[in-house]
Amino acid sequence: LWKIGIGSTNTNNINLIASNRCSNIIHKLIWHENLIITLGLRFINLWKFDDEELNNFKKPLILKGKNAILGNLINENFIDGNILNNDELLIITDTNQLLLLLKLNFENPKIIILKSPDYEFNSIVVDYHHEKIWFSTGNEYIIKSLSFNELIPINSNNNNNNNNNNNNNNSITIPLNLKKLITTTFTAKDDTTIISRPIIQIYDFSKTHLVFLTNQEEIKFINKNNDDSNS
Image 1 (cartoon, rainbow, N blue to C red):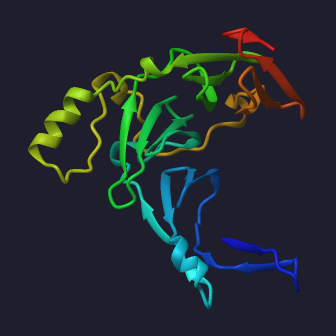
Image 2: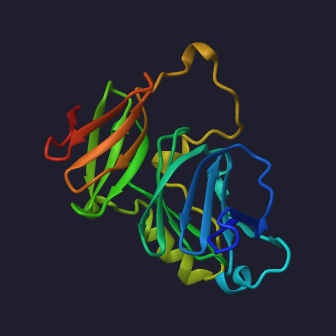
């Protein structure tokens, strides 16, 4: 973390105030209040900082880190995420095309598996104005949406039973219909099977439009009223 100071004597005052090391490649970094969430292959990390400590620092502090317990999701590649509300984050994976909900409790981050859309997706953004989740798909430049009401935990009954049996249990229960999709070991994909994704990243630009970056190094806009349409 760097602090940019604006003062009368030195307007270019930049100081390192906190840091830590992440040894893996980060696919996505999300800043939410006093938390930084990093996503990548086989990891979801939460980093926490205290505003009061940072304001009174005398030397760079160590950024406190916490790993989310992945359980049977240990081989997943977490590629994108977006804040859903004050204490929840939506995350997607490309390994098995999973949609996940992360509870942003630094001491005990919890992952819930949600019902995934029945199409390929590789980028996600939350639309607070229309209460929708937008997904970029693997089909040309098509963007599809899911309403907040369709965010359904597919193992809610198992979670409730596990919580009643052991409130401190952080293990993740994978539904039977998904277990066959979870790989037991990570193997690199053959270059000939890698799919070129037309949309690299999607953003909520305004109340009426989304903006996305393509694999052709283009920035395009799409009207939200053209639901599930081509740009």
